[in-house]
Amino acid sequence: MKYIHKIQDSEILDITKLLVPSAGQIFSTTLAENKLFRLELYSLAKGESISGHNLLETTLYFVTSGTLLLNDKELKDGYFEVVEKSVRSELLAKEDCQVLFYTFFAGPEKDSPLRNLPNNTAGLLAEQVEYRKNSVASKTLIQKAELSVTLFALDKSEGLSTHAASGDALVIPLEGTNHIEIGKKPFDIKQGDCIILPANIAHSLKATSRFKMFLTVVK
Image (tube, rainbow, N blue to C red; front, side):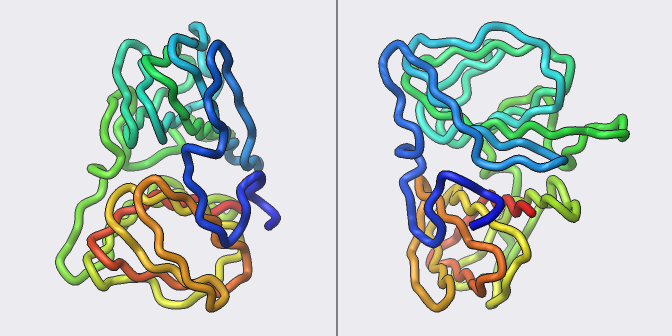
């Protein structure tokens, strides 16, 4: 595994166990970074806060467990908010929580690097892509050579046929269940899990119930 770190590749992991909160403390770790973005996981114990700061880059906050107040908006498990660069941000854990920070480096572009997500509006990430009968639906948030971030909605029994990607892929299920094969090794994943599809290893996905996922491919 070359591009995403600190998560065992080709193994299902309970995402809440990546960085367990501890009373009176805040923990953080960087999972991936390239010239386009940095992915960090933060763990905040109840009552802990990250005081107000002006963001240097556009950041997507995604809560994977617990409840967080972000600029006085309540984000629960599965909720997100995109905060634009230069906007002041304050975080407070209403209960033990874990949060993924996707920080996007805009480079020379003046526009937000993210597409198809509302800025400065909290919402359930799974609601940002809709199912279509007998289909695979996707919503691209970023599509670059070194990074793609995509939401998928797979109707039951629909899937992605066997293929290999040139980057590591982080799969975060948002709802439903899915059967994955990685190098012919089978896995069944659900909301609350995460799994890495390693670069250059053949894999396939098939929804065993209606299934949504947040997919990040890093090169």
